[in-house]
Length: 211
Image (tube, rainbow, N blue to C red; front, side):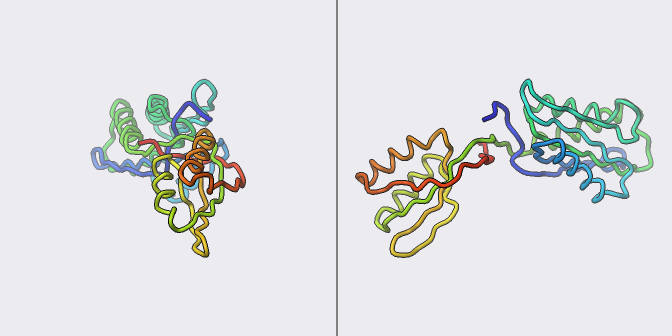
């Protein structure tokens, strides 16, 4: 669906510069509303902090919305460096808040730029990445003798088994990337001599992790 990567989950990293604590929290955000809600949440969590500096990129590639704020730091020393790091990370649909607790020693404008840049780099380098893709949810009734073969096929094909229900047969709830659906159905038929077939349910959007 998209030709850019997104954060797979929310993460947080922390560092200290001249006794000032910098806490960088990064999260997926798939709309401006989600990004603003995340920023508001961070400001509530760190309500006693000296600054909560936000930046986000919604969308990716050539279609995106960007925002950054210095949140009281000298102009251009906090939000802009954070946004610059986000731009260079290759991530889209991403929101970042860098929280600062002042440690009593002024860093100067150059020191602030370096500190906010480093905090943003620390968290973006650590975040697991994923792609947003269309997936097909399906049910599969599988006889017990074929269960391990089907499980192996799912692992090899990037198909997620969301649930298994054991009765006379095993009913598997599967999440299948739409681009792989036709090939997976053919592989199931080959595996079972035509015995196995999918019951297709709804299509959804999912985050599929990138190694």
